[in-house]
Length: 275
View 1 (cartoon, rainbow, N blue to C red):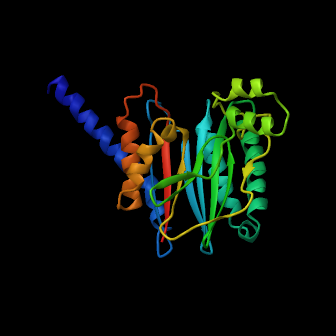
View 2 (view 1 turned 90 degrees about the vertical axis):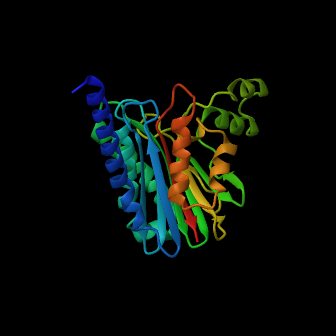
View 3 (view 1 turned 60 degrees about the vertical axis):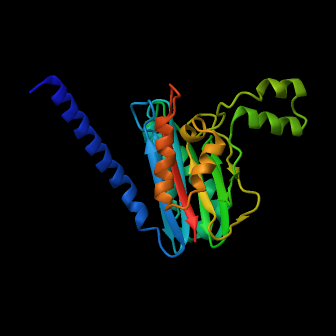
């Protein structure tokens, strides 16, 4: 048997294994899709060797929780999984439905403690976006720099700001805490300043008032590998297609994989269409 045939067979085997693993990861979403919601998700490694993105969905008496975690640094995949699992576990509490702000803060603090207890001196940090869909209302919280968006009509509307240095600079300038010159010097810095797992973990970005949803709105959660690789208009073009949300998620991740960008982060997207 020639070397070329062996290499081709190994590549085919790897593709089959990756496809099986992908299906196993996405299958649990099917049980949450129904009369009210249609869900889809997809991920890619990008040019990385380890998948540090992790997402999840939980249902509590018809109230939906959507989660997107983006692990950072060594052991980031452990931190991301701990974050998603902790948020999901705490969502079973009735207070999570009745008091979303309380739930988001409790889950963030519990996750911070679990990451520190589990990893101890080892590094391991994660961003996380959490969305609660209750009837026609959306509640969200964010730590780090995932994105919470709503696609309505032909527009992808940012809901979260992100905890990056440029956003922090804008807020501090508006509060009169830094000068215009200091603000301008930070506006091109999109580095995260606050994530779970770091010693200096601070507060979370959280909704000021719930967002009202309309029928056929799509809630879209993205890790940095998606919105740092693709242009906003490219994502909007895909979401405008009249396809099942799983197809839309797959198409967006295919675009990330086909991007000419040399250095590509893990990229993940989670979409929920409210019927």
